[in-house]
Length: 291
Image (cartoon, rainbow, N blue to C red; front, side, top):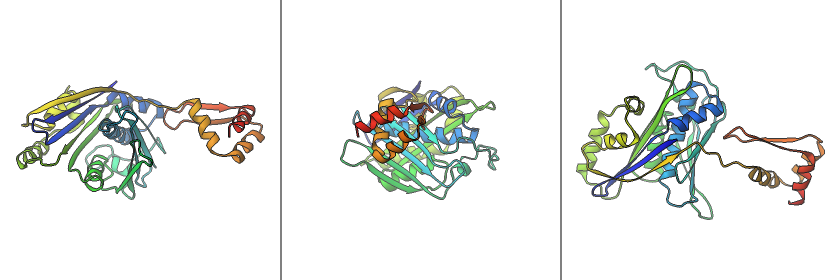
């Protein structure tokens, strides 16, 4: 299980959300059998989505992040509910590329920088909110920070990290997001800027035994903060046979007729959990009656 915590400054002028998403990202790696660099890329995006989902207000709200940067990983998607439970996938799970010039996994190269970050929020309105910003780094954290600044006009700081073991399992994963609220005093802004100058990478903090609470407190070092809440998160796919049936019905009678006439079973695989749902021709014909 992962953990998300939220803190706010004493004067209510800024808040921080932090998460230890190690177990969540490890589950994604187990499902998708990703290469090391793609585990890092997907894990970072899922971690960001989990925190952004936890920031939503409605119980049925959700957020979807999609990165299309033109890199070899292809499209990368992460979806979170309002409790931070998240699922994700990428178009090409296995990509092998050299380490970057710092000897680290080259997330920027696997993601690519020629494209956009899309954010879709389903918050109970007639149409979902959709924002898009150009990818500025491909490292994902900077792209999330840019999204908040450009699309939501909210000054923010985002840090994300995924540490992958030599055997491709996940050693740790996590992140934090700081946001300034209207009226944030200059003194607080300066303290946050100072804190960010010498803060260690998220994976280093997690490797040293720091918890999500510790990371949140460290991120707003020198500022008195109060804890708002915490929640447990997990990798959670909401697919079901009923949902797949509804999706098949939505393709229309002509499409269903072709499936039925093929005299072969129709299989539908969930991108998020790799579960396969199989329908016989007779079952497809029964769906046609509901169209």
